[in-house]
Image (cartoon, rainbow, N blue to C red; front, side):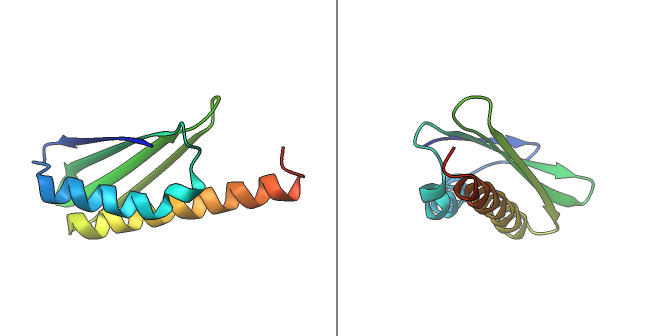
Length: 99
């Protein structure tokens, strides 16, 4: 899976990049192999915001956003939200007979 990490008003250093990639790697088994993920990290007022947009096959897209005072906590929360959405979508597909 291709991962693009963008910082808006925040310096995204190699440690944060590695952290994000490691966290997304744990959820990668639920993604389509051709998926692309865009991770946007930004500062909004006094909080840090993490957004993830995953574009899969066709026009399927998953979006999640999370805010927290700590950037790493915001990243953890947004990745958990993406995982939850992926599990929900996967279970719906399995219920319908794999379509």
